[in-house]
Length: 423
Ligand code: NAD
Image 1 (tube, rainbow, N blue to C red):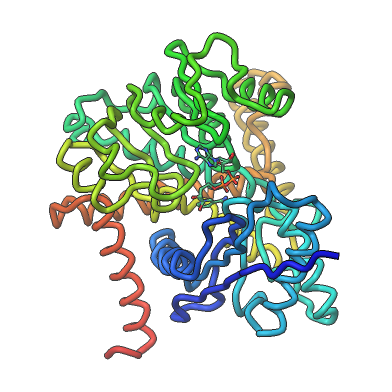
Image 2 (cartoon, helix red, strand yellow; image 1 turned 120 degrees about the horizontal axis):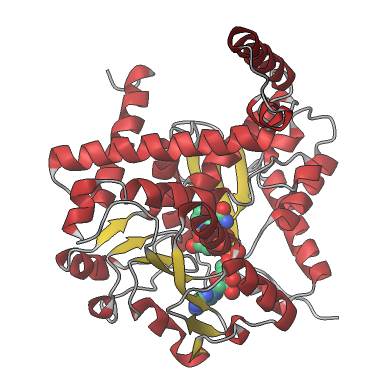
């Protein structure tokens, strides 16, 4: 028998609001400082999207590819046990979620372990978010970060002055995009931007290498090819960049570059060669601070991680609320809204003397399902937060990252003031 000691962390950055919240990542390069930095980022991120939580983050120093599913389950359950033992997890204490290298499967193991250890806790399902829908999760959580990235970029591209500065027309439609990372965040950013925003994805970077195709890559098709053949490099007709040079994809021509894999991908070494006009930080910390200076000097618009990838935590908040309420969203009002709308349409029929096509009637008169409400809540959150940050940016003539942090600090400060801590 072989014994392995695995290093793992959980950091809670700020208790100004409870519970604390932040994902758990499984990656080889996890260390204490990185987890601390990411937990700090979470405090600001929650404030920006008006989620009333403090920041936290977890990390397990493993490469999940080196372990079997059974071993991963044992690692996850043991990690959860250690969190419970230290009172570091619970619906009113600290609520983890997925991050790099983890997903619904790991969240289900965490929930099951927690529930086993705390069997009488009525709100146990709220101890972790990002759970599968069948296990107290919420519709629309898996896609939430990618969908949020789409809404955030759509807002950024709708400002006439900002688009003028980068020499482009307003609107997301028709713009070209390169995405690094086809995991949870990158794949949904790609599919939703294509299907709902009419964006053309011309490049994709992955672990095994990168591909570029000027006429456009169909992301759904690419995901199928990767699932069947194990590699994105088999996409027909695309120019292939081999694994050793995979990061060259970041330097290819496009309107919007979306790093959605790891941190520190754009550094002072490659920043000068970036050709994109907008960089949407879907990943956490993909641009080093030295690189940021170079990019800003080049006039590139950077939509910062602390805002752009906050869709995940926003919908996690909705999931936590659902768990505490013990009821799916829409259950109370769906039928009521549908009936009211049907009545309204029948009044219109009576007043005009014309019959409405039953197919149209079915489409128009419809109560919202959980997924409709989640998407609408997410869209509202991302749009509003963008407007607030943007106003701050204009007022103080600063870049968007500084504006986002200043806005978050102001919000956290206001909370303290209203609590009477700082008179
Ligand atoms: P994931 O594990 O689902 O996907 C990451 C993808 O990146 C994988 O497909 C992996 O093969 C690929 N990859 C790894 N190394 C690469 C390399 N050198 N070049 C190109 N691709 C590479 O992770 P995720 O959940 O999509 O997270 C990605 C980023 O988004 C992370 O920075 C994470 O912190 C951030 N994020 C995630 C969420 C979320 O809800 N999942 C929320 C906020 C922020």
